[in-house]
Image 1 (cartoon, rainbow, N blue to C red):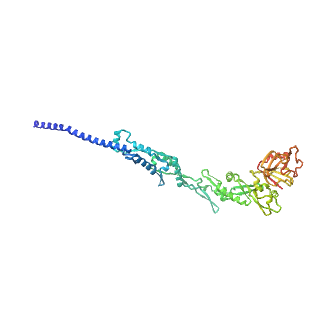
Image 2: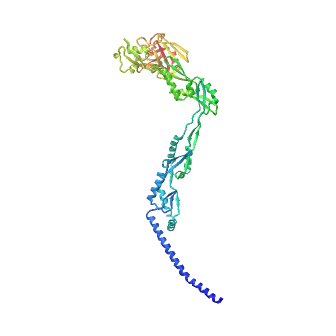
Image 3: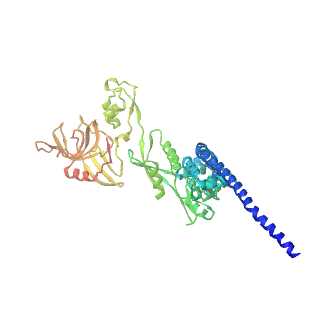
Length: 513
């Protein structure tokens, strides 16, 4: 039996071997046909994508699919998605806010981003391009994103204004003549800088749905609690803050005191240093000054050195401040027999100044009962007043007294103007210093001349030493003590020199009848 079965096995094997090449050849042909068909289809599809300028399938700009899109379609989608529709999300205390990404300075360059998307799969050869088209794998590229913090900052700062809360200082209130300490309240301010740092760390997250947490920074009040310092505050409230207003016309001071209710507003506390002080504020000081100014009306008011700010500075450094009393223009009713010259001498205001204040008035237009304006007496004091020095002259006594710091410093015998050229009585001021002035009207030289008022426009009367004629003759040396001049006040030569260097410009000269 063994001999009968072996040949049969051999024949079967040989039969299989005979048919195998044919099957393999057929299968190979079939596969090649399929591959060629797929290849031709892939090439055709690839040619279609190239001819149509379409992006290969599976290409995404981050989470935006662009596969099969044309160049123009891709640019429009990128611009709409990133530049028009994209928003940045912020969370503040579980409240969500959103802001257009473009408003915060985010922009995506749709042209260069589309270019990057289009080149995906096209920069690696025909075979690789074909395989990428067949596999349709997802390929993610990043957008060409730009972020401008200079645009984002003002937007966030503006938003901060809507969520910030101000700190409230502790304060002192009076109730039934007792002081009560009201505690301070902490405010809050949006941490704009921290938010900008979060965004700058990864701008792409801002436009891809990430929510940024907003943080509020506490704003501590300058004053927290005044209760431990109530005793010190009470002592401060007993201090007197005053304004000494100097009236250069009357040579007197008017004193004003700040009331307690105003002082309460000025309380300031340094809790860490356990110190309390009073600090005037400009708005409160202006209100107080207006009240004091009104109390001097109707003819007088306050003139402050360089404005209310100087009063604030003075009260910060001490409890007293200085000001000047000024006079308002007044009116005068013309009496029978009046002339502008007579009114001028009577009121101590040069005639040309009265005429400037009343341009429609002249000697020929005056009539009894007529109302004219008399300029402010302070117009005769154009320079800042030197308050610690004063010169007093008596026409009737032909004498001069010099005061410094309220004390008599010197006194001199003088000569004033003659009857037909009188010295005007009034309140004037040392305005000029001329070592040796020349008066062309009388051809004389006036040593150590100090101008005090204009007798008429451009002609200054003043104080000076014995005059010297051009021919060398010294005038009025023997006339001191009697009216002798053409309107000026005459001193002995040595006394005039001494006064010349003592009397600063701005010193008030009071001339009495």
